[in-house]
Amino acid sequence: MSKAWRVRPEILREAVLALLRLTEKTGSLKAEELSEASLLTSREAISILEEFVGRGLIDKVRGGFRISPLQRTQLALEAVRLDVPPDKACKSLSWSEFERAIRQALEFNGYEAISHLNIRVKEKRSEIDIFAIKGEIALLVDCKHWRKPLSNLETKKIVEAQNRRLKALKTRRNLEILRVKMKRKVNRKFYAIPVVVTLFEASQKIRNGIPIVPVSKLASFLNEAPAYLYNLKRELIKGGKG
Image 1: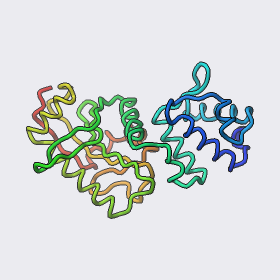
Image 2 (image 1 turned 90 degrees about the vertical axis):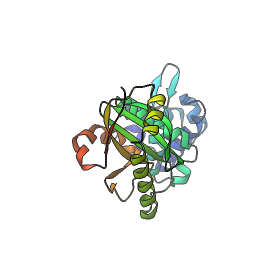
Image 3 (image 1 turned 30 degrees about the vertical axis):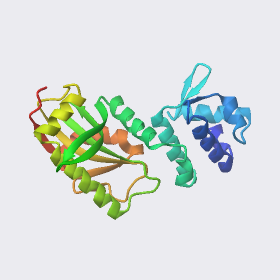
């Protein structure tokens, strides 16, 4: 085990929370700032930061360290693994930051992504948090930044809403809204797959064919999704003008 993990657990927990607080506005910090904001010595602060760099939780840049929205989300989950209560671990993590983290992960995996796609579902406005497309696979992502795992009833309601959005996307009006929002970067046909991305892992991994993916496992889901496409809820959408 590295030196960083010989730090007492309570000090390490405080260090992770301090990192989240310090990077809430700027996304960057120096080792001495972490030391001053926690019970760490300068040497311990540097050791922990270097450990997090090695694990991809933060990036080392000239003059200090930088943390992206996705890394901050992962860092909050690290705090939970260190037995920090979820509401405390996620206190400085906003919903918009959680959404940006998911979009960043999608774009990193080669998806063209947009946020806040407003469509009409039976004459009522409904929003797809993130629409992401790569080749002939499109994901309709519902981001759930809830500070607790989803209950069965909550999961049922969320999945039903996603299913309604999926069916509504096929209408001519909604397809035109999509093409305009995507600046016409839409294939003539594609498979649309509804996905729910959560902060914490739910008891159900899939419900009615709709995957429920914790953000910590989003990257592996994106890599594996094409292989089990036909096991997921999907709609073949036609009518795009390309």
